[in-house]
Image 1 (cartoon, one colour):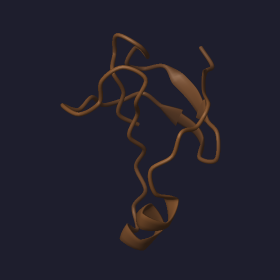
Image 2 (cartoon, rainbow, N blue to C red; image 1 turned 30 degrees about the vertical axis):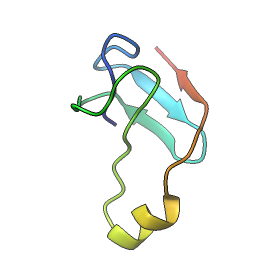
Image 3 (cartoon, helix red, strand yellow; image 1 turned 120 degrees about the vertical axis):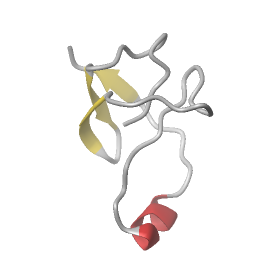
Length: 60
C-alpha cells in the first residue's frame, strides 16, 4: 500500500479492514495524512472496491 510515512512508517505491516494484511511499501503525492492507497490488480475489481473510509491497524 502507499502511505504518508509521517503517519505509517514505510515497511510497517498493517491490517486494512475489508482488504486484509499489507505492507506500507510506497508513497504518493496525493497520499497525505490519514489516507492510504491499496493495490488492486484488476481494474473492474478496483472500481468495485471504490473509495472508502476504513480502519487501518498497524501490526508492528
